[in-house]
Amino acid sequence: MTRHAPTPQPQTKPQPQAQAQAEAEAEAELQPQLQAEPGRRALLSLSLGLGLGLTVATATAAPPSRAHAAPNPDRKPPALAAAGRELLTGELRHTTVIQSFAFDEQWGHIYALQVVSSGVQLPGEDAPRTHAERSLSGDLCLNRLNMDGSPAGHMYLKGFGHGGSIGLQPSTVGPTLWTEWDANPRSGYGRGVCRFRFADGQVLYRDSDGLLTYHPVPGSTSNYPALDLLHQQLLLRYKTKGVARFALYDLNRFRARSFRPLADFPQPGADLDLPFQGMTLYGDHAYQLLGRAYGPDNPPSSGGDARLYRIDLRTGQVDWEQLEQTAPDLNPREPEGLAILYGRRFDPRLCLGFTEGPPGARRYRLYYKALR
Image 1 (cartoon, rainbow, N blue to C red):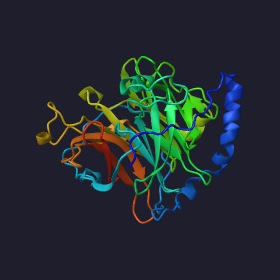
Image 2: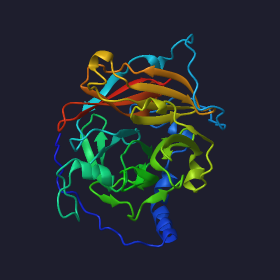
Image 3: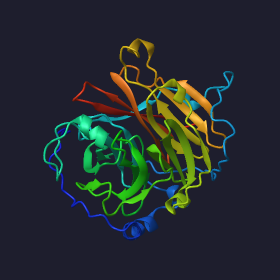
Image 4: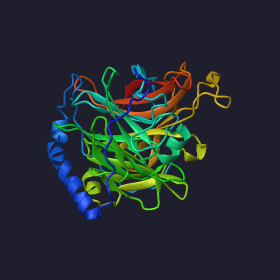
């Protein structure tokens, strides 16, 4: 695949408008798509050869009594304890690592975020910028891939964040994407989240028309969204005063700007000081991935320090935690992203992303395993 980005189609950066008018126009633009979104029953029959064929119950969440609890060592390991099987490998538009990904099974696409690589000059910029400058500015490339990994389009998101998680709402007219938004100029991490429609070749700015934006936790940063459409839930990971937390919301209420969470609790495992590498949710459980690439303090001989967690959203407690054994022979094997893959011929699967290859020639590898 091509690694160097040709000049994208520019979008004229809009002038600031009144917030209410901008939101009304954006909502009106998205309304046909939102009306076309499949409901819970319709999601059970999405098809792509994969499709869906499962029965689920509506999840409920109560405020957690504790944020962390050690799993019972005598308990039989769940199916997700096994190493994952390879699903897909390939390259993204830029040579930087994959940050997160999501599946659009209705249209047969994968969407993946990465920080824009060094040497790229976007419309309106007077010179190419370095990767460090892109990271601090929160400039992302949103890749659209076919299910075989071949490229199928891209967008640029300027001033959005680091790209640590992505949510996707499918519909009959194309998906709505949820991402981190409003990058803090001191860190490059987003202070809110947003949703928008995919438009191939477009450059979006943090104040572009067509964005619906949210600041659910004022004063926070590192706002990462994940969606569970079968249960109409949104999971937010955020940081406030340096402390990472999870908040669970009813999706429809969140879209209506009612930000009272169903649950809110500290991120488990934060005391390990391992990089946060991805999250997803399904029903009563959230899943998170922590860990570093191989290096002097994390040698391949150790098997790596990537850790997978399953968290009960009803209590905020960890009910399964493990050193992840998937793909130990990759180099540098940095964990990057979690997502759910639904299917008619199989139960939902948990998909994990990893990066391999030297700087300037990074590749992604996606793996899957049983969800439960």
